[in-house]
Every structure is written in C-alpha cells, then in structure tokens.
Image: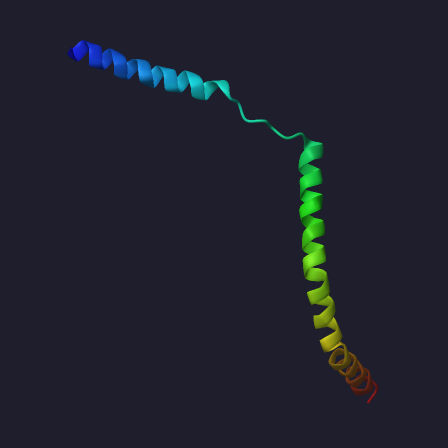
Length: 76
C-alpha cells in the first residue's frame, strides 16, 4: 500500500511536470517589442500632453517677466 501511494504521488508529479513543459511562452520579436513601446509612449504623450500644456500656459507670463528682468539687469 505504501509503495502504491508513493508510485501514485510520483506519477502525479511527473504528469504535472510533463504538462507544464509542453506550453512554451511565445517570445516577441524585436519589431513587436518596438511597436508596443511606441504605442505605450503615444498613450503617455496624449495623457500628459494636455496637462503639460496647461502648466506651461500658467507659468508662461512669469517666465517671460523673469527673462525680461534678467536682460534688463544684465544691461545695467
């Protein structure tokens, strides 16, 4: 009985290993990887673009005034 249980357990383990080894992961080609990276980049640009434009518009007047003050200060 003990040998039968050991044999059954080993059979299950070997069966599980055999099944798991059959399915190999599909590797992506370099072109597919580049396409995925490019699409992820485009999504981020679309998401962040509007926020960055708003931030730039909000700071633009202050940045121009700082630049003007710096130019005037360097002439004196």
